[in-house]
Length: 249
View 1: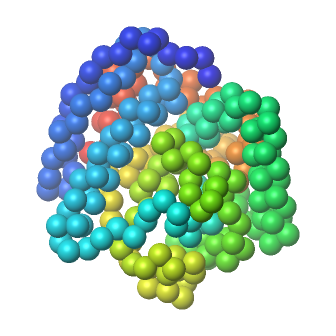
View 2 (view 1 turned 60 degrees about the vertical axis):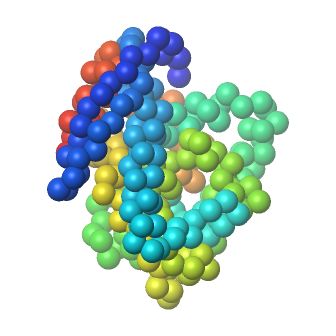
């Protein structure tokens, strides 16, 4: 992606979250950008929401089990919004050729396992599925135990730019329970504001016959289409941010 204007402007706003309010301040590019190019600001917003959520959980006497070195959840099917796919694809494309080759092999290994597990057709994001089907797909995928191509030494190698779905997945139950959520009582933490869901909806609106997301494991294949969904929402940074934020309340 082309780099946005380096000049930034601070945008202050308040969000209603249930019965509460969130005062936020984000720095966004002042010049013309696409939705994809303001993802860093949205990641900051997500981090603030999650940090607040964690503080509340810990004040109630619970502790978050998720931490570096525990990669149990990194074998789930991660839904990646089209805007995140665009940004992550650009990040991968800018890597040195040696690193790209390593990643390409990991993605190939993962896709081969998905194919051999008979999951390819079931992972079509453009098809609508009900809750039961989605849950069954998630469980069956996790049972294949396919590590995320970005997983290294049981830790996320792209943690600062990891998908919103990964940021929003927090549990208080023992880490080993995440190995098979269908048989273990995994206790998740409800995050009151999930930007991932909004990005999926926006992706569906701008992608026409495409789905609003892709499975992360399809990223390198998806990159070959050279699709740039972020351009569907373009304008000065504060205006693009507003187009997202107004849909959050």
